[in-house]
Every structure is written in structure tokens, then in C-alpha cells.
Image 1 (cartoon, chains in turn orange, yellow):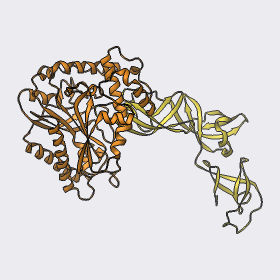
Image 2 (image 1 turned 60 degrees about the vertical axis):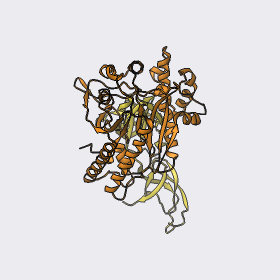
Image 3 (image 1 turned 30 degrees about the horizontal axis):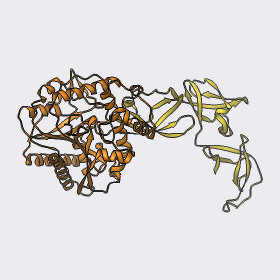
Image 4 (image 1 turned 135 degrees about the vertical axis):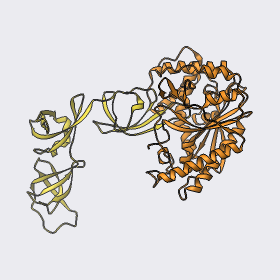
Length: 344
Length: 186
């Protein structure tokens, strides 16, 4: 983590935090409204969340707290609401650390019609606007705004750092030796679910790619990002097909139309050209449900209401950007609790 | 316990040894598996290693506790200590105390580490004050050259001390290095 917080260990003063949030929220809203998007506010308590391998919702009575506003916003798009954005409170259980908090804010927006280049440009514009707005209110110790952005193909970078070319659609057997190696590099043991690979080759592929990506990110991607010159933002594009989540597959079937944006070595945003095929989405959620069962994670209901409307989703692209992280970066802080309004 | 409950000072049992988490960082790539990157210290040997666990892993907690004791006496094979609060006496094998035995004086306060209710380690205060029982006569005035001579302390421990030290002096000794720190004036 970049040592941006020298002298700021206690974080910003409370009046300054309020100014930072006020400036940041205004900048986000001005920017996205200026692009013609309309602001929405979808329910925080919800009956269904996207099934993701390693994202755990918090419970609120019989309902769940939203882990992301994605499903609700896509249902609005499916009902003809056009391009929209939201600054959403979201909750993810047991994510606690310097850059993680169980409760945080996602700026989430969708362009309809839209594709990845448009929302990637949006990310750059929102980041620039927030840095400019925050720098204006916190004299003296602002973070370094990205002056330029580069794009890197995820699979090329994985291939380069691991010494083995990857197409993105390899089955579990093909990447097993790589996985064994990165596990060794990490000195980690096996989970109960790791011992015997599942019979279903699609599930095996999901398990293998999810783990490979997680360990590789920590061991290779983060150090690679840390070596990039200061002031360079990085869009990592072209995820392997197994990590498509809720994005559309590229026509070659190897990759997903998904990207992540990083600033100062910190992952800020995740975006998709959105999958609009309910059958395919259900298939992916079912695989995730099987994976979660394997690791003994709580069972989550299939998001039927979302799936029932997904086929009517118009062609669109969307992004989720972590506002707390962006404000921390703009303030030159490396921990969310140095700028957040939590802990009151 | 589940790995998500891990925090600094968590005590874990790994391959039959007790470890304590001394540093810990949670990282999580986008939609990937969370990693708990830890530094852990072996509570018996003191060895420090890096260890990473992934979300979903379960860890064994170690049954360890540290209690305060006072040194009473040695039988040759064992050292006997008394619990400060309960007056319970325990015997600890000499191997466990090893080099630390050279600092064991009557009534010295020590922390004894219990693992699964058995003593597995002893930690002394970082400094102790011990009396010189034998040494060559003191040489006045020579405090600057750094020259030293041999001396034997009350427990039989032999070490190098400055030339001005004499029999009966009380010395402050660093128990981590075993070396002389200063003369204590009383």
C-alpha cells in the first residue's frame, strides 16, 4: 500500500471530512448528471442479491442488505428508464481492513445504449472531477490525481507474469499446474473443497479460475500496479470467461466484457458490458451456488425477480466505483477510516 | 474459528504448535477470494513467519495462557516455581528453561506460558539485578577504556564486566543478551 498517510494517522478532522464528502458527492453528481444520467435511489433492504463466490450479504430481518445496487438498477433499465446513476450504501459481511469496510458507498451507473469505451471514459472523468473537487478543499496533503491512463489486457499480464500464455477459457485441468505454483508461492494450505475437483467441468473451471485470479492478483498484479509510474491510472481489461460474473461474453468465448480500474495501486472500479441473457445468467448463478455450497457458505436465494426481467435489459454498460476509496486517494490517505464518516 | 474472526494477538494451533498473530492485513481482489496475510510468531520458539489464509478457511485456536510465577528452587532436573496468586507450585524441566537458568534467583518473577495446560515456555523480565559473588579486585578510575574482566554472579553465571566492578556490587543484566548493562547504586 502506498505510504500516503504520513502525519495523517488519525485521519482528517471531522469538519474537513464533511467538506470532503460534500465536495466529492457534488462532483460525482455534477459529472454524471452532466453526461445526461438521472439519479436514482433503490432499496437498501432487498430480497435478492447477485450470487457471487466471495461476497457475503448481511441480514436485515427476513431480508438482506444490498451488496450492490446492480440488480435493482438493471430492473429499472429493463423497464425503460434509460441511463441512470446512484450513490448507494452497500454492505458486505466480514470485509474489514485498511481498504475494506462492511458498509461502504458505490457510485454505480449505467449507460443505455452503451459499451465499455464509454463507461471507461466516464471512470476517468469521475475520478478527475472528484480529485479536483477534493483538492480544492483540503489544501496541502491531497493525493496525486492520475494524469494519464493506460490499458492492460489481464490475460496478457497473467501470461507474462506466470510464464504461460493463457487464452481465458482453459479448463481446470489445464491451469492446475499454475494454480499449484501460485499456492506454493503463497505458502497456503488447501481448503476442504480443494481436495477433490468437482465432477462438473464448468464448476471445476470456475473454482480454478477464481482461485488463480485471487492469488495472482495479490502476488503479481498488485506489485505490478505498484511499479507503475505515479500519476498513471490503469484499466485492466479482458477478463477470463469464467470471471464474467454479470458481464457479457466477448464473441470469441474466451473473454468477458469486463474491466477494472486502478489508481495508485488501489482497485477503484469494476465495469461490464452487461449480460442480457437470463438463461446464461441463471447458469452462472447456479455454478456460483454450487461453489458456495462446496465451501460451506450460506445458501442464497436465486434472484428470480431480477432474472425474470433480464431478457428485457437493453444493450448497456455499467460501472461500480468505490467512493470511499476514491475520496481516500484524493485526500492522500491509504485507509478508509481516515476519511470516512463511519465510526460515529 | 473462521478465518474472518482473525485479529492481532489471535492465538492459533498449527501443526501442534501455538502461534500468535503479530500482524495482519486483509486484501481482496475484485470479486475474488479474500486473503488474510499474517505474520505469526511461534509462542515457544519465537520464530516469525508469513502465513496467508483464504476466506472460508477454518483455524484451530490454541489453548495458551501466560501466568505469573515466582522462582523457588532447583532440584537439579527441575525448577520449581510458585503461582503468585494461588500459591500453587509447579515443576518445570530444566531443558525448558535452558540458558535462562543462569538468571534464576530466589523470588524472581517470571511469566510461564501454558499450552494445553502444560508449561511450554518461560519468559524472564528483560532486565534483572544480580549481585557479584566473585571477581578480581576493582580498579578505580578506569571507566573509559572499555577494558573488561571476568566476574561470577550469585547464580554462578560468569560474564565480562568493567574493571571498576567489585564483589558485592549489584549489576543490571540484560536477560535477552546476557550482558552487563550498568552498576546499580543502592
